Image 1: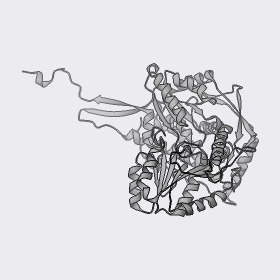
Image 2: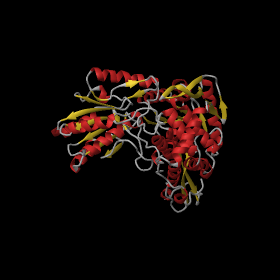
Image 3: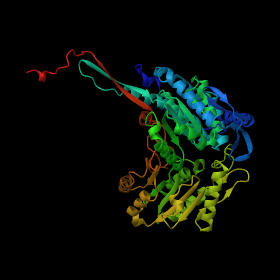
Image 4: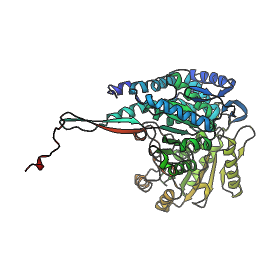
Length: 542
């Protein structure tokens, strides 16, 4: 390990400002051209194992959620044989990758960040994110460009900060800590909703780990392009091995392998709990105890005090609940509104919701695109049909899958604070409201804390500072990311490190040294400058 000299000047850390895409701007023209190119590409997405493109013939279509009859290309699914081959490639690369100086490991990542910020890769990855994930231009740029490159640069800084944590030494000895990569391979499982979650594979790899990366089935193209960028920037073959396909089929091989060193996961709570049970059942068979790091679901809240500003609250509800179709783990999905504010707030929410354009996110006026796939759409359609039958819909409440998997931005109002609509995760642009009596502030805070098993994000809106203090204390373990007079979404790398506890994950805070240390195995080294020549201690002498 060489000395990390002058690192703060060498590695500036974001946040990177997203482009405006204003009318007449060069980025609006360039993203339009990139979208045309991506639509015409007919992608043939392979697995990437040991640097080799592996096509299996088990084909699944790559489609746009907002135009699901139009195919962007196809992806080759891996099975047990390809997964085993990817593990072997990762283990082979582990023999030398983790022994390189940190500068050589960091170089391709930092080069990729620069290429993404300033070159054609920004448009290329943004366009794929818009088409495959149904994100608007602005949301895609924040995710695929800004957050991706900010994670990379933050990881380098955090790695060097970690390396700087060294033990003290007494005269006659020199003590050091070596931050080794884990022994074995890291199994990275990424979700569909954020391209920047390639960080689950990239972060451990920077530290010297080698990775088997399994992306969500509905995000195969953006994963493929993310790795292609990194390989073009110089990442050696075998460091990150990409396998597409069914999670259960691939996971069965990876999770049972004796050399599993860690799982880095973002996805559903149910899947993460399955992974945890599987690792526990196999614990006697591993070479080491695998690290299990995960961020899962949420039922994120906004709780408003009677002193809240209604216009600010309404804007936060709309942005927090509807941006990216409510498919952010942090999306606001339950609102606790005081009786005194509800009539005015309700009127404002209805007006704002009805003004929103739902449709193709590549069109500039669109605010809400489509949900990710037919399975999710069917779940939301069933839930909203039930809401309509129970008379809970304030505004919205409809779905349409004729052209794309569209779910209208929706506000529900329930009388039961334990209604499934306010306790169970939907992952849709649906905000469920419970109206409480103004005098029941303390009881309402207890409801917010105790009504769901999750602990990811939440927000309090209040002009009264004593109310903010009450909420901050009562909701201390209710959210790993807590916001005051702001929406509970939009965490920024290095500013609001993201992650929650309870049923929402292990709260290891992506983009921080706390996350990276989970993928390092420290070794203490003592160099003795004054070796003894006699085993006896002075007290033994008479």
